[in-house]
Image (cartoon, rainbow, N blue to C red; front, side, top):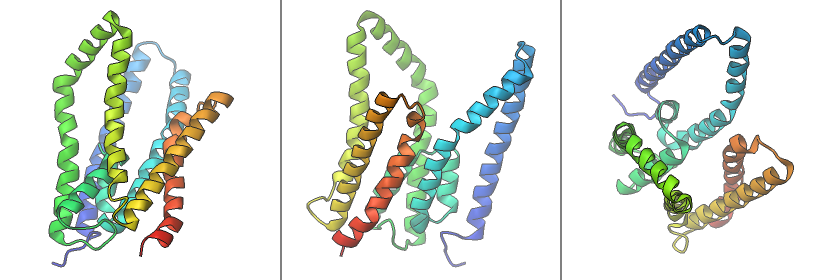
Length: 240
């Protein structure tokens, strides 16, 4: 059987998994609705909460859609659809796929062999599983210790949390700046990163000035769309 990143078998496997996740969501939604009625909440209040929640799922859905579009030319539709529909995150999936591709001598955007595709898929999947395993084991003790530290010294706790966050951001920035002085692709990545950062800063200023609460949910997809749009002319100019 000839390998294809969009083989019908991959669609079937991804579809079954996504269907199971949707079924699980429906079951928990029905249980939560029933329990809320038992606790005395009215149906009108629950409908209002459901409508509000539905609106706030649009922004993450846009980011997921962009992620699938970004990865589809290299990895096909089934794998990105599966990864970003279950426990994946756009920031993780893109960096994991790129790192795995570099490790096997492949380049995202070019045709992959079955072995290269398999390595990338396993890397993306195995990497995200660590979070599912570690969070139940260590998250409670971590949050309780951080809360205790915050009670003793709130300033130090804030500095610690900020340091962890900036460490995470530095990792992605490092990936974006890799190869800047080596080739045109590196320059494109750096300029797209800079553009996205500037757009995010502008959105932050506008949010503070005009009290736009919606920015919290739509800032990421807006930055992604603008970054992708900027990447098109930059690639034409710098990549030969």
